[in-house]
Length: 529
Image (tube, rainbow, N blue to C red; front, side, top):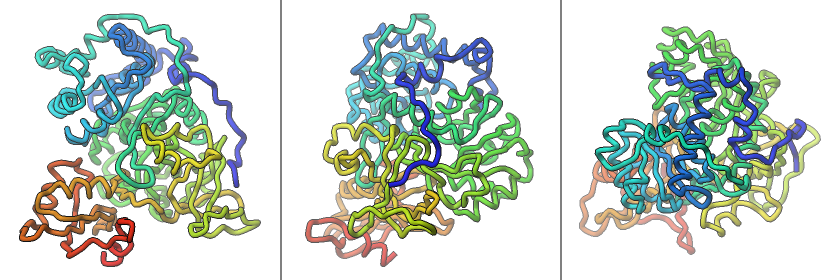
């Protein structure tokens, strides 16, 4: 076993609201908390907290409290911060929903999470209404964050109505160890599962991430989606904890990304590797003044060290890398700002404070000892700490398979560790496909393909496209006499799944290779490309 080289940090047994906003002083209250990157509209910390309290009061007046779950189907806009924290302030659990999901996918998540409320925006309303109907959520519990008249006409309350009621936040005793946030993740394999994170998990992970070196003078560009745990913890909550300024961006567009960075003088960019590729290579970068950027942090997928170095040379910034997963709230490892330049950039650095790890031999599951010098061979990385999830919602078997009796979470990722404790992710056991930082579960696409009347069997693996991205490829067995073609398969998936899940390649085969127990032999499929 090896641990963080840094001393443990104190983790208060407080709610997330108390931890982030309980210590605001007069100077803090007048600082700008959130800026709408598209319009320039600013929200101070005073305004933010007032709105959070008002929404919590309105929800309490509608009998929403502990034991209730609400869905949040919303892109990165300032209102996300109000609604997310307002829901938690009322003692309600929140399940964050991918903005790209179809109505079917949203409905499945809401149903699985047991959500009885849904918050969304007017451009998402058609999908949200269909999803709410599927999940049994009545119109009066589907709250529209913008477009008050549209909401009223459709029989839905609006955020303006809720805030305008001016009701005080409820006086609640909230157990910080109870499930509070339920993002969905495919874990190490399988279809998406609800990850139960407590307020204590979220408080802990913010406290553990002081190594990124944020200050109240920093300006963060929130391009990574808040519905994803990376954006939720490392952008939304960490920024507020450090009294920094957060500039929101509802969807990624590279010219807009560059414009917002330039115009708002952003100092920190938290990104995924595809954005690093653009920053290193795209000619458009030279048309913008990015001199304000002092730190770029990459996560969500492995970053190549040479690519990171190219970003450093082009922007004149510091480059860091972090590692984690939804089940870890999400961060377990990072290169701290203080160690930038001394820790290899293609590594994920050290375990963060209050975190212990071990490496297990892939074949024997025996623990691999830390070497006296050099680095270990490859093994599966396990992590233990206050950021480890409570478990998967209504999935005790999956939880037991992921968290061992000693509290170590099996990440499904293959790593090496140096004598000094530097961890490098080299491969993964899990079968997930990672496309531009998004997780795609092969089993989910396979289940969808099998609903096609002309498909007898199917398997999905990740393959590398010409641009280097990992994308889904489907191996399909046709029904006897069927004439379904490549485009038919791809269009079918596109109709029923989010854009990032779309199948990009199709190969028709006579049979899907499987083990005696019926498990798909993906290794054989990968061998044929």
